[in-house]
Image 1: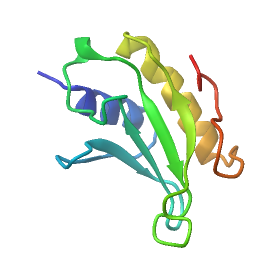
Image 2: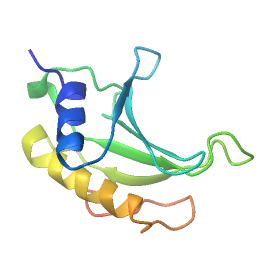
Image 3: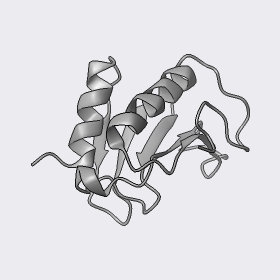
Image 4: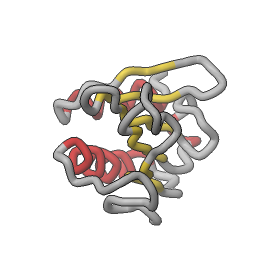
Length: 118
């Protein structure tokens, strides 16, 4: 059976975005390289991605511009939802990720991107 991490990585790959499952740790996530020292991390609101598809409770995607530098803890939420439909939520998440990868981000701080407060 496919879990949410596998579903998400496959959807990202179909959109020509390379995602990697990172876990199991305290937080399980899918990460995307977003430039030198930068990454986008994706989880649900319970800090996991290894759940059954029908247990989806929304995606949370955060952009970390400098994981190794002075601003290592700074991030920008680029997508946050409370959708229970992984099939409807994932394309919206991917659209926000594509915008972030295309440089449509501001400084770390408040949420950005379509669906940021859906």
